[in-house]
Amino acid sequence: MEAKLADTKTGVPAVSFSYPDVNGKTVSLKDLKGKVVLVDLWATWCGPCRAEEPYWEKLNEEYAGKPIAFVGISVDSDKDKWLTYMKEKNAKGLQLHSGVDNVLSKAYKVDGIPRYILIDKAGNLITADSPRPSDPKLKELLEVWIKK
Image (cartoon, rainbow, N blue to C red; front, side, top):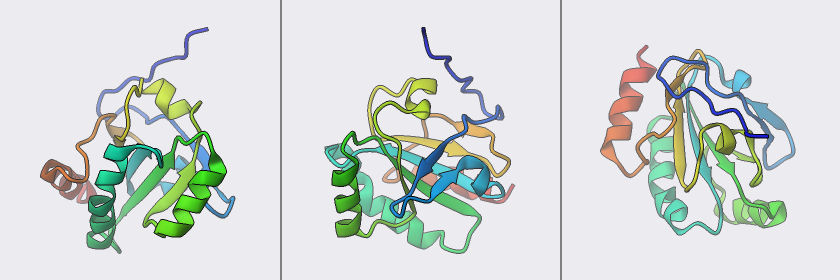
């Protein structure tokens, strides 16, 4: 059976997610209401994903204390490898693990990573294919949406 594709227009409810963090605590999209949410679908083995890490870290620092949540969602099939990587890197933001077969990748037809999804404070989609942290256009988007 074909997975239902999500509507990707700005303003439609974003696809809900709920995944464990590095400590096993489940975090859901609804837990982040009131914040702009930048989701980073990535994996430890992904070169382009790792190239974005310094920019991701910098954004986390720049927007500390602002109403924004940076949520890395690993699509690694090997959860232990991801956990080891997380401990080594001490990555910023919320770090969750979904594995390969996850609702966001299916709903938004993610065929390559990294993929960034931007969600507004009410849980509605801003864009299912956001600019990367290394792209100055992402900061422009964040500035607009954290003021709303």
